[in-house]
Amino acid sequence: MITKILVANRGEIAMRVMRSCKEMSIKTVAVYSEADRTSRHVFFADEAVCIGPAPSAESYLCVDKIIEAAKRTKADAIHPGYGFLSENADFAKRCEKEGIIFIGAPYKAICDMGDKITARKLMIAAGVPVVPGTEQPLQSYDEAVETAKQIGLPVMIKASAGGGGKGIRIIREMSELKNAYDSAISEAISSFANGTIYMEKLIERPHHIEFQILADKHGNVVHLFERECSIQRKHQKVIEETPSPFISEKTRKAMGEIAVRAAAAVKYEGAGTIEFMVDKDQNFYFLEMNTRLQVEHPITEEVLGIDLVKEQIKVAAGEPLRFKQEDLSQRGHAIECRICAEDAENNFTPTPGIIKLMTEPSGIGVRVDSFCYEGYEIPIYYDSMLSKLVVWAANRTYAIERMRRVLYEYKITGTKTNLSYLRKILEVPDFVKGHYTTAFLEENKDVLAKITLKEDFEETHAAEDIAAIAAYFDYLLNEERPNAGNANDNRPISRWKEFGKRNNMRW
Image (tube, rainbow, N blue to C red):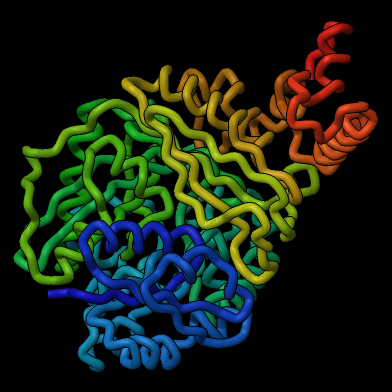
């Protein structure tokens, strides 16, 4: 029985895991770097342990420090969240050696699916369709040339240990191959300490669709339907939704069955995703498996009414799944937007700083998974995502309408965010119609640039200044009142407001 969980992560996902633990009456332990002393997850946990300096390599990626913190606080289990050590097979094995439950995939499944070449071989053996490409690592540039000729351009070079869009290069002309080959290896080494690369056929303008799967230790596997993740910038997801507006019910059923087969083939346990590329004719191909909880898991929770973190914990504790495939069905439509501290007008440069004012949206069908608060200083060392904004509605049209509303309600000042950029995406006709692929943002670059949002309140220092000036005028005008401070003075508090009313001014 799990009674205390150490969350080996930070920010939004640490808060997400801890909230489910609280509901299950499970004690929580936070770990934090020196840069995260004031992060909300530190205050929210029952216990907190500092594990080192700001750089991830000296804190959140340091296995020894996290294991030591778990042992010191007598935690039964460790939940890795996503990112950092969540797909680190050595970490999962170390937890097992130390007698600590790892709330994630088994060591071997992480190894097998973490290496994309091995994963391709396993999927082919299991009868799962894969994108045409190599089954062995590329050994030389000359081999890359011959392989590209055999497969036929365009092709992609990909890092075998890759993720997050790193180590990927697209080649449309043979003249691009040498530079792509060298730079892919270089980025793979710097990002993953592994320069192994392979080649795949490039599927033009595909949909990126993933299936959430859940498996227990007793051989039971189910899928929790799909998520459409095709709104991407440089292979990084921006907006996700479920159900997909593209695939048919027939394709959905076939992909779900294949996803379950893929998970069973590697004897998977816990929550994970099988990711597919789907072409314009709804032919689908295995892309990769993420052996962890995904950033976009809340939209699946919203349409199914299932808490995936709780299910992860129950599976890790040895409990069988409490539902079968025939018990599951999608209800309504959910959309998620990733709110990031970045300047969309300046090549999406991260914008760390202090959040001065923040108003989070609310109302029916609205969920904000966040870790920020007014006065919080966004550190420069980590991912720029501040929160995940999720809406649910009875159908896709209503969900889009709701997301538009809540994006306007969401106010953050003190730093630039991508809120305005997200608002514009929801106005693009192709998105509204559901006619989009992974090429959407690039193809609609000019459309997005021309969209002017009349009601858009830009998150700029100018807005802050206007508010400060108005407040100061209000203060000065009240100071001039002859009876200021008199308890019997029943006149309106602000003559500034009176002036506005007399002149039909709106503030």
